[in-house]
View (spheres, one colour):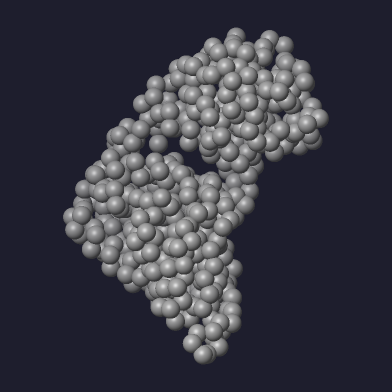
Length: 513
């Protein structure tokens, strides 16, 4: 999508890079992430109003350290270096970076030496988040120190003439209490960006782009019934009306009653027709005896493509396939956004096979989940629906570690329904980002009545998050957990034990596969 103003973030492998983009967008300025290895020409073609250099795990003086092969500082636009980005500035421009005698991880108190430009409006002393083992021992020529901590004598520097700023801490992390103000100062005061990027401006731009791209053609919308695909369908309908053809494929991997509810909801709330395709037999036959999670995802992705290819041929005007792909899907699926490793394959990322005579439309490929929700609200989709928990494209297949069977699916469907029902009954649904049950590949001994049982273990997962890139486990009240466990064991034949997942992301992922 074309953006009038944008901030480019060069990724050097930091776990926080996505947070930088989010914080800048929250200010009202569009930001996107690119690998540090981007060419000078490609970067120039993006016409950035400013460049932010992310943190990273490397030492700038180490062999093979990630360093751009051109002079980023000669682009003529303001540059802000964060952590590794600061050290890169020093290393490249004549300063000295060395291993710190005392590493610094966690909270620190920043003493601001100069409250102009980058630190305008900040307190003289403010909490920041540190994560570094190297530090600057000599400031590059032409730079001045503008902040320090007790442990880091050089914690922020600038060269106003060359429009370069750098900070040792991470303003993008929540624990940097005035970090958002620092980023706002950089993108608005220093880069001169207007804070006009929001849900309304996105919709206007997306509608215009969709109309221009589609022309007289029709669009097949892959409607899973989740928030992303639903908002995409409504956005497409706003842009091209009845030229969008919504298709929902029941993969046999859906939650209890999910497909039927999707069809009814679109009919009642959006006056849109959705074609239902039963693909249960195809999906389950292809997944037979498959236990590797990556193979599962790829098989499911291929099955969706094959069925959509068949269905698309029923619409003479169909030239495009729309998907609700999100930015985190792209980041986690491909290593094109920097040196970070691929975490998992997403079934809807990576384009379409050549055999499928359709072009791809992904209106949310640049958006985070909460941004899609904001777009949904702006489009008039009810809050009760917009706030639905995410449901993965591969469905319950990635919530049953190991091989998939119809018996396991039916057991999990019943347990999951009880779990979500009890969350709603307790008034906790909107406090939780995502909650779901998992059927573990483990059987345990139990005693039910006077009989010995040997049945499945059900894992319960609930997390809080803002964008799915990081997540904390939800502290479920014990009495609620007790009711959930009691109901699942008593009402779901095949489960005799319930456990609760208390791992966060990272190091775990939200889903189990």
